[in-house]
Length: 282
Image 1 (cartoon, rainbow, N blue to C red):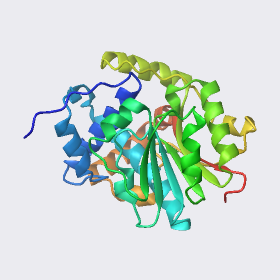
Image 2: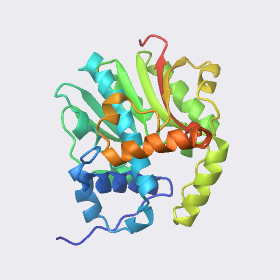
Image 3: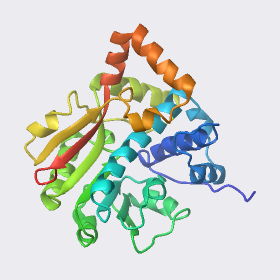
């Protein structure tokens, strides 16, 4: 095998390696949830200590999160097969490879150092374009607006690293410029943030969560033109995804939920995956 590539990423950008490793581990299982051989290839090519993320709970959680966002994008494409998807903080995600229907339009947006790494493994095409920039900088919007609507934005583990003011500005900017829009992103509570930031420190990951959201309905009260369509926890899986879990995992879910209902609710409610829509998008 060729020598592994050393990488240089910013503190927050380095966190993209966590879901990458989770997808790789999942793909090597007898019954994978995502089956992402590209993730395995990238982990093998990158010179980085992935062992510090080798936690069964975290690997499963990251994989389920990615799969649940996939389900929302698939639903959008089922209604708008020639629509446009924008992956905010794309990192080394392979969502395009998993969901491409042959007619969609796709943009992968991330900060310059993450894009530089991404370009080592992915090639743009007529329907798939990589953009280097910050979600807070409107410079990327011109390229996306040239692509046909409606639009679906996905921000997996992105906004939680921003401040509330930054999140509000980013979402308002999207809602103002893309009225026929759906946008999926995760939220977490202050208590969960404190726990996760301690865990980040233990695993020598410098990135820290910043934005606490106790209730996703808070975003509706910001009056920026977004309404909450759906909100789920990692235990609240759609049937299309639950059927892909291995029998032991499904059994563990049932046992934990039945024996520890209050604990399960407290832990899962602290972290939510949310789908919002603009005022003119059904």
